[in-house]
Amino acid sequence: MQRVPKYGLLVIFAIALNACGEKEKHMTTSDYLHDMDTAKAMVQKSKTDYAKYQNDPNAINASAALAQTITDNKLQKCWHDKETTTANTDHVCLDNLGYKRGI
Image (cartoon, rainbow, N blue to C red; front, side, top):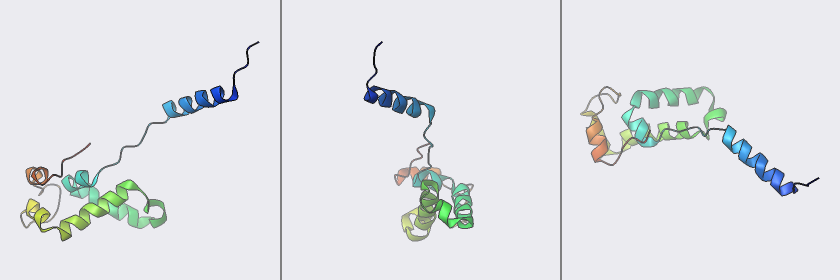
């Protein structure tokens, strides 16, 4: 009878675990700039349970996107003095400023 080294079992177990779990994709700040309605919804959602969302990459990136639209004068022109909604977004303007969508 052959013995399997304990490290061999550990490696097999780690590979099996890694294969089972899919990694969650997170929206980037650029993604949220292109989809302001989703960014606003994420920020509102994070306000309902701060402890749950304080380290959530989606909540952090959504907040960063909203903050950038307020503080960055270059970005403000991508909404042509209109409300910052997804429908009013000039996506070409964002792309030209380097905010390309990743998803």
